[in-house]
Amino acid sequence: MGKIFILIFFAFALPCFAQHSAPVTAAAAYTASCSATLNEAMAVITAGNTAIGSAAAGSLNEIIILADIILDEPLIIEDGVHLRLVAGNADVTIQRGGNNLSHPVIWIRGENAVLHLGKPEMENNLFIDGGFLSDGIYAYAPLAALSGPGAKLYMYNNVFLQNNYNKGNVPGNSHFQNGAGVNIRTFPEDSGRQAEFIMKGGTIRGNTNDVLSRVVKGGGVLIRGFGIFTMEGGIIMDNTALMTGGGFHTDSRGTFNKTGGIIYGANAPAGYRNTAIEGMGKPPSYGHAVSVAVVDHQFFQYRNDSIAENENLSYTGAREGNGVFGAGEKWDTSDKDIWQRILVIVLIVFAVSVPVFLIVWRFTFKKQLDKKLKENPAPVINLEIFGLSPREKEICKLLLTDLSLKQVAYALKISNSGVNFHIKNLYSKLNIHSRRELMVKFMNQHTMS
Image (tube, rainbow, N blue to C red; front, side, top):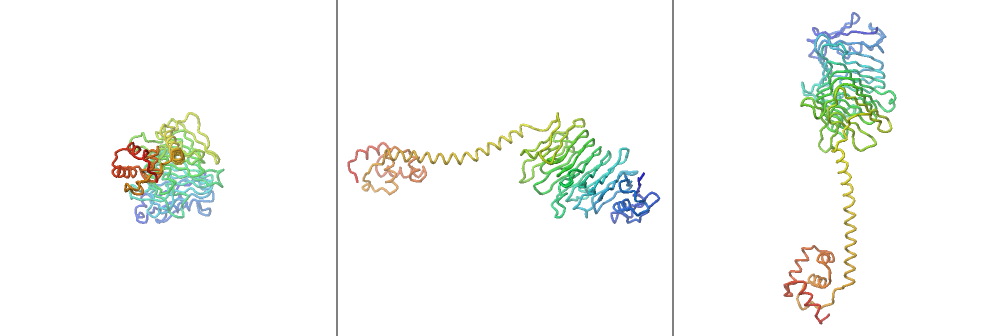
């Protein structure tokens, strides 16, 4: 049958925890020393020249875990390996170690590689834990990553992907520095064989994606590039992303098929709701439950409210275009989104129209001023006898035309308050109190210079 049972026994594990390791035995075929780790068990499964035999590749090999494990290096599923991890006779935890920060805890990177987390009849709980709540571990990668062409990850009831805090931004691991729970990314050259995450049950919870970059998406599940997320059951809850998709986010080239399960949104009780929050200096957030980046539209399609067990959604992406949304879906096209679009349009129109209006106004104002001065030039009068300053003489002559005070200020390139200041001094020296008195005083004057 090709099924291998490898038992990590609790009784022998206790003296090994100082080295973060656990002993391994294989069913009557292989016995490892106390220093053996989960990765060494993997080496036994994938080696063609061991007592387990060469039929391991392509067969579903099973590791039954009976003790907690701390992984200080990623568990990597290579080409053709089909593996199942199950909890034995008690609840067990596979936790990220403090020396394993720059890679996923589980990395399915092989071609046609398959990993099953749990199985339908598993009674005890299997926890894949990022260590943030227990040990305060800040990592730089998600809990699980799929990148192999045709790779698959299955998840069943009684499995928990939890407590991973992804800070990101570590050189040399740029492909998987985003997403906190599961990151799915098939590269363009392998887009015909997309990696797929099939969630049949279990819970993805308490994960935070806090990557300090422009692309901050996907607290629970993220498709970055080509990939498929098929949700048939389970719960995605209490995850956080700094910008979009607290529960789940896919780029436009990803495929999202939901036939079961629950993705909680902003309307869920505390401790359940997924959250997309606005980071400092970042754009507004979208999609507490789900967000989908649509390439031919500047805004996301998103769901802020919880998506129930019986509410089936589908989004099929494509390499070109943004794919199609299935019928009867309840994607958020709220007034908030509409008003945001209107606000953007108004701001653009305002930013363009104000400078144009000012230019047109100044041009029109100047033409009117020139026309008035031409039609009604200032009289040539002798002002030397009044002891006026040069500016007061200029203002006096312009006041004898029909220019407004605003036009006088524009003609002299001074402010309105400056004009009023000089007028006050002018009237005082001429012993008058109004523009009308000024007109009477000089328009009937016969002494011309």
